[in-house]
Length: 204
Image (cartoon, rainbow, N blue to C red; front, side, top):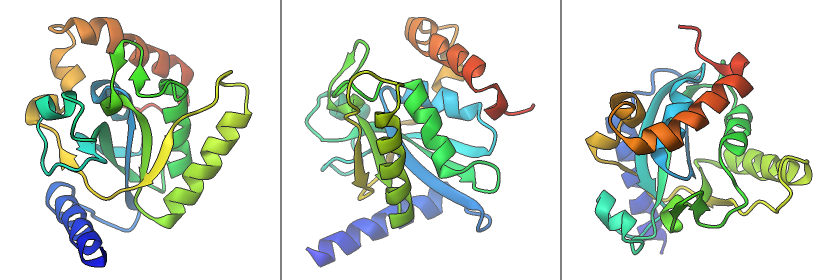
């Protein structure tokens, strides 16, 4: 078991090194799912302090799954985004505050009409500090008046991550005029975010 976990950790580290350049100590990674990754990607791309946003798959038992396999609901993966952020500009807690407000964490394996375990609400922590912050953030949000139903978001260790196909990257920006899902699902979430978190938007 220890050998298997070591291999999984090495695999995660390899992906991180190859795909995201960690330039200095203030740059951190976060991985989480809040429904369709087209929505979450579009929101965090607008956020000050977020330097890279990448759509991917995490939490399953199949190596390097395809979108079709994940949609088949048998790989165990969730659609996630992995972000690189500047911790001197935005904190992990602030990132989670945005997550709670921009998806429904009270519906199990579902976001609106998107149904299935791949759309589950989940935070994959990279270290114990993130785990502690996520648990406290969930507890505080659950105790607040934000949602009348209990939060069902899971907080799990990051054991794997696979970048999604290239056509899923920057999806909303590339397809906002071509895809009805972007028009009727992603765009309203983006517009709501812009109004609710004006102070978090990138200046340019």
